[in-house]
Length: 328
Image (cartoon, rainbow, N blue to C red; front, side, top):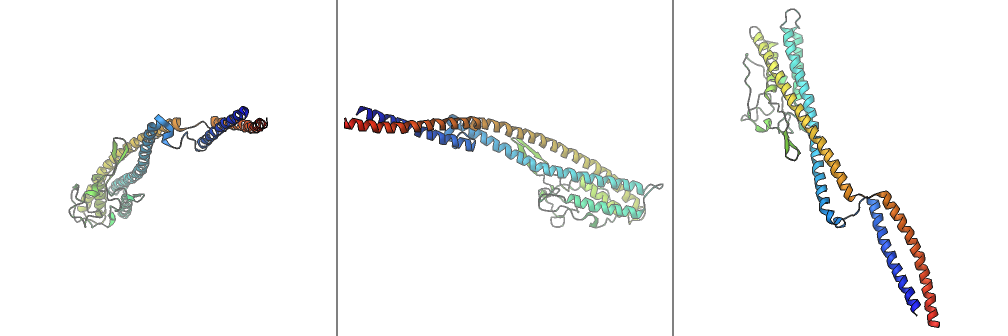
């Protein structure tokens, strides 16, 4: 009788081992398929809070990378647009010089065509969009900021330049007629946070003094094409001086935009490195060695196959012992 009981006890023990091994095998299989040591925080014990902190930090860094990527697109578009406006101011200044040069000057008709083309180009450039946002509209993101410069009312007499200041609007602004009291949003500058505690203001309004100078220069150059002396010469002098002022101001805007590009690129690189570093730390806690796991699974399966055979033998032996003890 005692042999039967002993055999049954062995079978119970082996069955318990098999169940334990089966549970371990299931766990190892889940780790192998997911690439993580546990599917829940409770499985990480004292490392659970660290996991939460790392995941939070990675999410924040990725958000900053996303913001930097978006603003980089806008800054690149500003760079191209400012380059075009600098070109317009340069061509206008050169055209005025050529027109007033008696030895090798351009014709009045050619100058008129140049001014008309530059006015159209400046209008198109100032109404540049980045995605759905008008770059030079201040914070009126969905409003094209500039009316057709070449279609503005003609000047009636040579008048010195006077810059319009916020919130007032220059006559070429699309909201000039509808907002006689001005519009602060037209002067607004969008901002973006690219890192913890690091925010940049990067917008350029079409009402910037340098752009006012460019439009004023184009208006005077246009007036000169139909004016007679002495107004013609005065218009050209005003246009030349304004073109030079516009060129200087636009180049300063280019430099500021370039500084923003450099700052954003530097921060974006740092944030990407942070994501990489934090992800490696997270992998160090969560990650599993798939080669090692595969070897463990293979070893465990081999052990379980052997255990099944032993258990099967014990079951047969226990039955024989039991029958022997009852018939003896």
